[in-house]
Image (tube, rainbow, N blue to C red; front, side, top):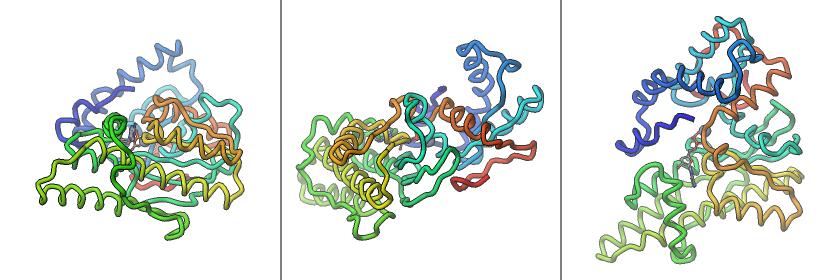
Length: 307
Ligand code: KG4
Ligand code: ZN
């Protein structure tokens, strides 16, 4: 992983132009390092995998162009992968016993999806949000002056706060069974901050962080458990950047144990964006016969399960 977080911190979020320029600068170095660490060469590997969507088109294009160039030059098969499929497949890395079908909650910066993993490479989205959980963490972090990236900073501050201090709203499962939103929660945190400011009251940022995190975790766990019950799934996994959140992992594990479900989650390093998960997703796609041709393009709004 070559992280750009330090660069984007300066601007309080990802700047697309900087992201793609840095991708161009780093991509060859990263490929070389990965091969070196694995003790492989471009000749000894079986295929080239790449994420081609969804995401920022400038960043995706760099990866797609690199992968096509390498695959063409070395005459290797090219396997394009959906970014969210990669997040889901991160669960296979450390859980060789995990096999589809299972339910996966994908919580990342741009997506919150409840996915029915029917088989390798076969997915059905059974619930999603327009405003992702990760984005809610980032927005609230900015509002209380924690900066970017918000998730880990909220989690750290929340440890010093009282999660029952402020009653932030939960989007109820009954409101809309599978599609849920964090917009009400985000506004509620902003309103709370405004009210305190108008009254000249000092805010306890740790309590806000803890209460907000609790509200997000409650909603995610409740919706996931409801989906598991509705679809009769006994195996539940989580994935994506927010899945590295300790409070979410603990609450989900507890809820699963209570119901007799088996719970799976990748180590935090495999939750955040990484290439290993794309390689694993591509491995299963490769076995299923998925091959892409030289006209593969970046698809910023690629749907899960499309090829
Ligand atoms: O999956 P990811 O690395 O990138 C995307 O594909 O979006 O997810 C990044 C998101 C960010 O919004 C970040 O704030 C959030 O994951 N995140 C966390 C934590 N670590 C990262 N959110 C809550 N708690 C964390 N510990
Ligand atoms: Zn991601």
